[in-house]
Length: 189
Image (cartoon, rainbow, N blue to C red):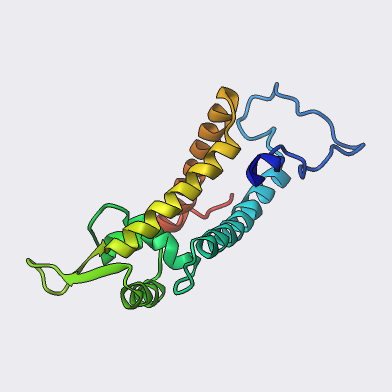
């Protein structure tokens, strides 16, 4: 039996209802009236905490693969590139990196031999990124790690539906926050 099967993936850390907690009344006419803002606030904080925790999981995965020359942020860049050939701009948009952070991480990846960075033949000002054999080997190991995590998390059809619903909700939240910043829709009245 592997270590993953010993883990409990249920909602054990979800807060227990308190004596003042009442079930939501779903009879109101306005969407959002039944929304508990503590849930929304908790979700925003959970997203941040999960990202840090995921970086820790990637760090452990790198260690198990014997990779010590890059960190989890660079490993995620390797995952984003995958089998594709990307421009630096495409990579930054896929991973929501800032310019200086992306440049620093790309330099580490090039120096460590995980990616090739070559000038674009049509536009010498832009660079194209592609994994080297060493990068593809790391990418394969990281994909196996993600596969094991997915299999531990999703054990039946109900959990598949839950995962898909969670993903849709997070995508909607990502679009909402992006639109609020992009279009200055921060009018709260």
